[in-house]
Length: 135
Image 1 (cartoon, rainbow, N blue to C red):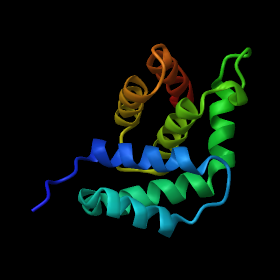
Image 2: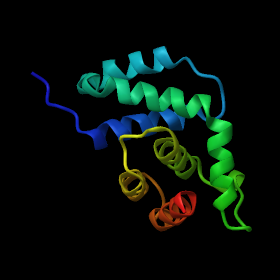
Image 3: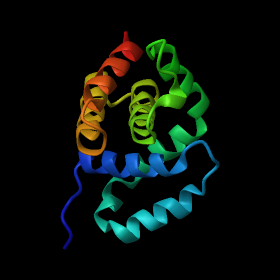
Image 4: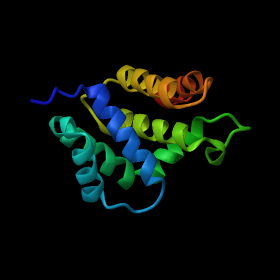
């Protein structure tokens, strides 16, 4: 029997899929199928992962506008690393579109993803941007 996947692990899966989509149209069903083959434990959180992936994909323009609005003047969205941008997109999706995830949790989880996957100063940057989004 496989172990249960935590919500943080599901968020990590969603982040990896959001990272793959960029700004192009995607085949979400194919991406989910690949994910469940690679990580069968993700089946328990499939609804969250699918909703996050499709939610970011469908609302990417609005999400990017929210991010751009709080970025420092010298740092436009095009200057963000793909990793940081994907983390921010997922977090802003959760903040704006998912009612059962508190803003603090979305921010904290995004900071943890940045610590794990992005450059050294990214966690502080992600925290600052997301704090601007929620204020």
